[in-house]
Length: 91
Image (tube, rainbow, N blue to C red; front, top):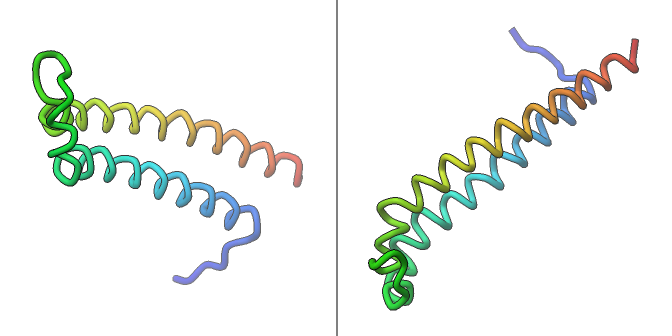
């Protein structure tokens, strides 16, 4: 069943996809970038008695992922409230 989205729904999904893409880019940069691609330069920096690249690869990327989940939940809550307010104003 095909459904045509109205302008408010398009606005909502555009904001949602933009948020997801931004968070995925951050996750990519931290997970792959800090742990693998930039491992050599970051290995010269010590953090909690281990190299920064090692820390990002084993613990930092997990913490960043949890923070990204929290950011997503908070931002989507705000977006949902904006969308509901838009729908209320329409009635």
